[in-house]
Length: 397
Image (cartoon, rainbow, N blue to C red; front, side, top):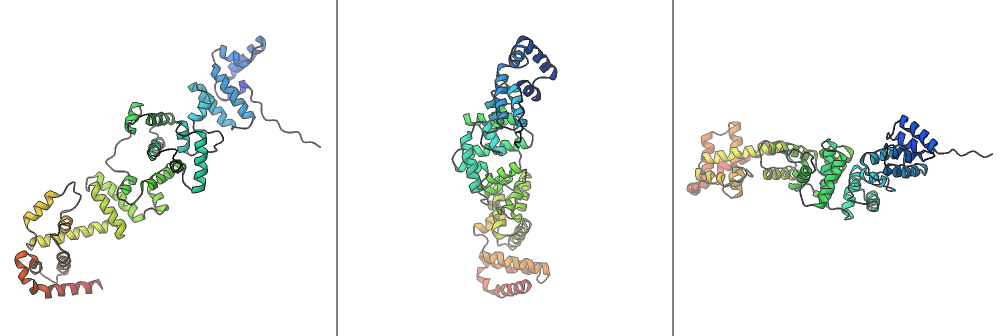
């Protein structure tokens, strides 16, 4: 017994136009009547009545074949036909402008944007998709790896993806901007203005990725990969960094705090970069590092009160610091005005003062041995230093 094979819907021309929302049921009904009476194709009747164009008919015929052959999903076919009608483009252009490749398979958001802008053709995308699957790279990094696009192009696409995510720009506007970027040497902000798209608000707070890259804690390539993964999955950039073990949670928290501090002009970017490096290398929370810097400032205050560091040195050092990159205390150590012995003894004296084991005057007297004029009496205070260091070791134990 033979089972009768189910027939696929024919999707006649009128039905396609109707279901794509290009004509109304009344227009279709009237068109069919006229076509029957005049013995004319329905498409010609609809063109003559001004409801569709010749291009619309061509697009519908191509779409009709694609649906019958099973080459395209019916819903997608209708959307593409509607798009082609509204923008009066060919069906092939409708495919491209919507980021839909033929035979490429499902594309990421980034892939759709690049295809729509004509940055990469179907063949290039097929290679990149294959490379992405074999390497684990996201599509954008795979395209860079294959030298089909540059890192700058990838960066532009990711910035546009962020604008799309935030609903600051439409998909077609993003396509136009990307095409303009490929044809000129202008910046993204300039192209956005030229295309009539509002430029992103420039924030005084640096991007997290830029902060980590400039700190030397994250490579630019890894930053772009994480950014692409984030824009595709709507995941937070920082948490993806931790998830992929590119930074620790401690470094991430420090970087987020540095963002706020830079925006408030508490620190310069250069100082923030250095502090982040210290957080990573010393594996200490930012708060603890800043507290230790505060202790260093207190030690310098003691040395200054003891006359070890004169006022002129303090003024000259402070005046030589640019953009608050370093504190006065750090520069004094960097330039050798404060030796390791001075800072070590100053720390012990500070701790002894806090415990009440030594008076302020006695602490200044001990630290005063570091004054140039008092070097001859240096030996007289060695016993005091040794006692102080012994107390410190006992406290640490």
